[in-house]
Length: 510
Ligand code: URP
Ligand code: ZN
Ligand code: ZN
Image (cartoon, rainbow, N blue to C red; front, side, top):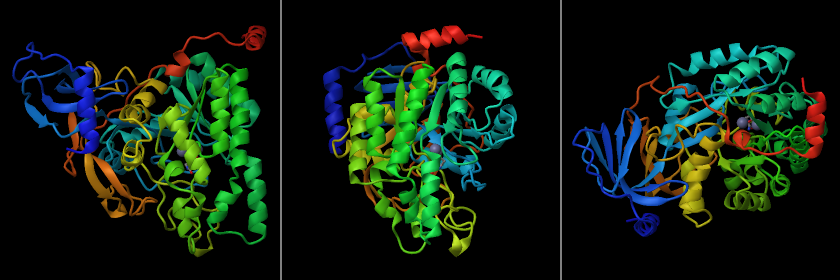
């Protein structure tokens, strides 16, 4: 038995497993998972799990066989991963379509132990939000093999968007939206940001923020390009850590002014981590997300011959060893609630990273790296395996907290009676050397090529359907379902705004 599994079996025995159950008869269950080491964010125990109609119907020490049985005695039984930040069939700010569609992205996610994704329905300027959402449904519905929701991307907060469309969409289950402080074609100014935050606060949505100072980045980039510094490595130079920490500080102030919770996504730099931590210490409702690229890559990875570094370019860029350390620390000490992939898949050719072929500069490339499939294996191997994170923190960071943060906890994120049977059977001892050729996305490379990992998902179940088993895809195209989301946890949290905020809110109430 793998050492990690052995340790958790021992923990399970100590914590007291649920009692045997004789109230279920043979074949009551569509599927029974037997003898597994079940791990939730708050407990680990040995148990059988009985599944009926896609939901968990029973958890007990011993349950009768179901119509199908899976022996999980050498497995960790984890809640299926939830990836709450990925870009699928989305056109980037410079007009490039992602390499993955909803079929390849969800297949890739499933092979990596993820059973729900929340990508974006992205509004570009001039588009009406309801039409944007309808378009993404038309793309996802026939193709997805696992469940999905949508965040909105709001780039055009018109009066109609703010007062009609967003309130209606929030009521329909799109309870979070991402806004950008950078990219000329997406960015909101501070005034618009306040409008969006106020709308979120009034109607109950969570705002996710891409926090980078657009002018700082543009100003440096223009000087670099003017002097002939065009290689991918200059992407990291132009996205200075101060651009990230300044914007992080600024949006936290805007959020506090409007008493609205915010989640800063894809945090990369040590200063930004400290800024978020400081605000949390003051009691501000500020939350953080980080991604594999900030734990496992640095700016040195971008410094490669020719244009090869383009495969490692994302925004914000990977930083340095000190930032990596700060990000690991932030995962362990609770500064970050969620760990997502920010899967932004672009091929290393004219369709993605190299729109101008050999003449492509760092400013022309589509930003983003793939990560849907390796998100869990990377964190398990290097986080749990090396003792940086507990197994329960791993579950919280990859599944449970995403459900709480984004209004999915009524269905997903834990192994509990009544919830969807979204389950990942994990082989803690399996050793895998990462190779792009073995992955299921359509990107053609991975920034993690050649890494040796220990721990791998072997059976992945979504709403009781076995989607992946022993390296084979068993789910039909289009069998994933849209999940409507409820009020995000941070929004539902009761609290009293500061006296200043109360005063200006009362003076300006409509
Ligand atoms: O480089 C990235 N992260 N590309 C995807 C778009 C975004 O900002 O999340
Ligand atoms: Zn972003
Ligand atoms: Zn992103």
